[in-house]
Structure formats: structure tokens, C-alpha cells
Amino acid sequence: MSQHRRLKRKFKDQLGNGLVCNVCKASYRSFAPRYPSKNDRDALEKNKVIAGYGENVYCPNCMSTARERLVIAMLEKIDLQSKKILHLSPEEKVYQYLIDKANVVTADLNPGFYKNIDHKVMQADLNKLPYAVGSFDMVIGNHIMEHVPDDRKAISEIYRILKTGGVAILQVPFSISNSETIEDPSIKDPKKQSELFGQKDHVRIYNLENYINRLKTAGFSVQYSSYESMPELHSFAVQPHEGFLYITK
Image 1 (tube, rainbow, N blue to C red):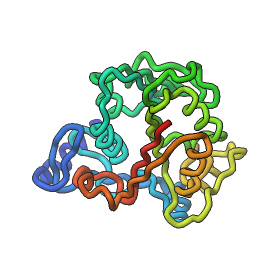
Image 2: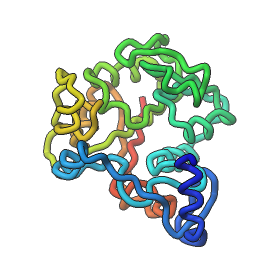
Image 3: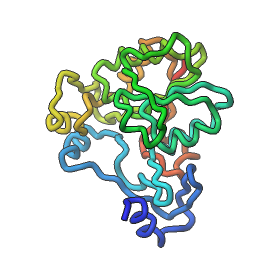
């Protein structure tokens, strides 16, 4: 039995008023949790990282995640009609939300991982994107920058390919305790990466202010809405303490 079917059966008695999935519209008193592996837990807890783990992460009905629900909630406030969007490392529910509303191009360094989401997904290196200046109205890369060794170069590439007035959605996990970003892009050992950064393919844990400064240095304007300032989204079981970065060129 698939994880989806198991969760749907397990949470059948939780159906009712409470949390509402803004993807499938199902309502439950609670959603399904997601916890980090033992190898990742120490770094995440030590650095108090908001990383997509905790209670009420998965909708039992459609398996949307808290971070997908946050992005979709914010996309609902933007006119997407006829927009050209680059969706990097495409997440299933976000991609499904977009395809009927806009012209969507998907891409990843390792596109084979995403063929089940979009069979047309392209191969692209974030540090050297194969698109002309001003090619897109929007770029979405949800929780990808923490994987990229040269994130400053990647940010500048996204800035380059966006049209003036374009929007970037580039959410990242971040520490609510560390005063600086901790990183070491030279580490290639998955075990060490788990120990330091809380995931075997991460190369940093961001300090939010430092991340925003990196975006601004590339030329972006950034408006940050804290989790606490968006109570209207809390019923969607978005990640507690994860705010939203509205990034524009």
C-alpha cells in the first residue's frame, strides 16, 4: 500500500472542521506529520531550522506539503494569466496549480528526478541558465538555494533571466537562532552535510537576514511577510514560523 493510501485511511477519523488544504479543499482536524531522519535531526534542532518538518505537514487527502500550500496561497494573489514561468526543481502540487494558468517551463540540474511531474522538464545549471536576459515573468525555486554551492551566482542568474517587474519565489529553510549563515560548499560528504546542515545534500543553513541581503545585492527588491503577519493562511497548515519572501526585479 502506498504512503498516500495509508495516510488517507489512517486519517479518515480526522475528517472534519479544522485545517483546510488549499490544494484539494479537504478538511481535517489534523494533517499528517513529517519528522527528520536521525542523521539530520541534531543539526536542525541545534540550529532551530524552519525546514518543513513538524506536525500537520502532509494533507492526508492529496499529499500536498506545508511549503507547497504556502507558495500556492501566495500565487493565488498574483495574476498569472499569460505569464511565462520558469519552475525550477518543480514540486508536483505547485506545478499542477500553474499549468492551467500560465506558460510553464520546468528545469533542474538532474531532470530525471522530475519526469513524473513534467515529462518535458529540461536540464539546466542554476549557475549558467540557458535562457536569454528577461525571458521570464516569474521564476519559482522552492527550497533549492540551500543545495547550490555558489548561491550568489545562482541568484544573479535568476535576476538576469527575469523581466523587469518580474517576480521570484525563492523560499529557503533558515535558522531562527543563528546570527549568521553557516556554510561550506566544499564539503561533498553526505554524512558530514547531514551533521552540519541537517540534510545530506545541503551546503548551508541560512540566517534569514543574510539571505535577504544576498538577494538585494543581486539587485532584487525583497518584502518579507512573517508567519505571524499572515494569520489568514494558518488554517492551511503552512509551516509555523516560515514567512514569505516577495522578491521582485
